[in-house]
Length: 265
Image 1 (cartoon, helix red, strand yellow):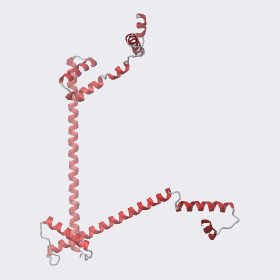
Image 2: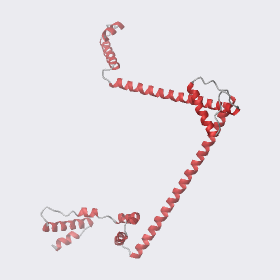
Image 3: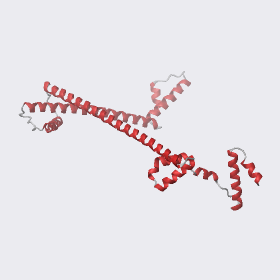
């Protein structure tokens, strides 16, 4: 038995592991029921390695109680083969490195957030300048060009709504269209031009939407015709193919339009 054991333990690590497994299996066969084996591989896989334990301590040590943290430290001391002083120094260095990394990450996040806020402010300033220029040009256009008569009742109602909003923003009274003063005449002209512009934009959007809907309906109808086996398009194609084959077979017999109509009927 001793010679077998010595022969098992000689060789590389795989031979040693196989020898240990054979010895354990022999012991289990003697003590337990026949046919049972000790699954040492499962036990080996269930034991975490030192890198996982170290990562657990570094990332989640603050979640565990002190007793569990001390056990983790003891396990790491045994796994890394260091004295308690070296282990404490090692963990202190690791904590310092982690603190520096977190500080650097926090600074990067703050700088990124600050840069995002600066870009947002610049975009808002550009948008405000663009809107101011647009409003100024629109007012000059409304002042220099006479307003066409608003024939549509919808345009008149839309112009009244715009005029009410403009007067509300300027904190002034709504001018009377029948007898306006100079400022009221200008505000009425601006509101009329804005109503016309909104009407044109609405018309363009509706026209584009109708074209898209027509195209969708056309594509859907074409797909339905192509998918249906007995559709008129498919039957016409089949008839034309058959007639073409007959014409190729008998080229001596002339075929006219009337004959084609009779065949189709």
